[in-house]
Length: 389
Image (cartoon, rainbow, N blue to C red; front, side):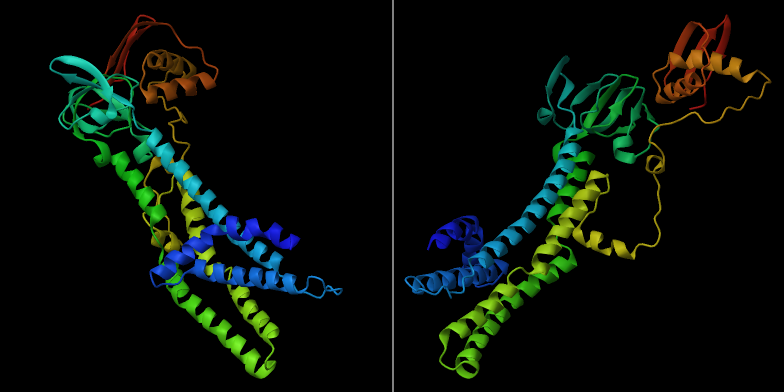
């Protein structure tokens, strides 16, 4: 009975969830894996208790006890659920990272006054002011100003997009170097980032065709196993060992116990959660479990985002000079002019020049022209990188 006391917490405290799940399933006139786990482990446990009681006082320790069988089964099945929970945790972390991209506040213009309010209080039609270096709070339309907006978190493109009056801007993207006044058009769950988060959440809760098949099989599998177990008991009781209860009961327990840890019922949801969760960590989002399941049919992968196949930021690779100027002198002048600019392309050019150990000339005058380029006076000569808009 000491062994019974040791196994009791495993069977009825740690394994309580299986009894609760089995009760709810049977109450709804259905059968799931919890029913089978509860029946199999309970049969092994109570049979062992029975054997321990009738062997008390006996001088020969011949009782066949199966306490460890029920404990191991419960432990292994809970271990599978732990793996599934960890997979869900990774998926949740990916969703939290996406949510962390959102701005927390917005600077709105109401009744002629600037007010910084929580993002939840922004309403459609609000006029929002976005300063350089700030995140755009919600989806909207530019009504005043010019700037370059880093949309790489949404598009994967490393080069910022120039924005001016009438252009659409996306919430959680980064305003790089200009001041923007915008009108909020989509807020809350309607924003592009919120829709992405919803897609990820729905994918975690969706069931792939193989998982739905597993659920259907479980609904039929459990009653069949119970039926086979009862049939086994009757066969042993009537034909194999007529009138012998113990061998017949042991054979029935064997059927129930062997069927308990159903790999299909545990492995399928665990693998889907692990696969989609791991993919989300690398920025790969599946709209549903069925898409994850059909990936083995893929024979061609097409990439349409620059950031997907590069390091995600512009890099100076080659320099072509048409007017015969020496490369070092040319880069010294260009680097000096572009160093004053906040544009990401200008910063990449400067980094590329500095990596070549080229010193930059002194800048006497500088002017940034949003949407066009820069003008600068270097060594008393005027240089311009203007381009057609």
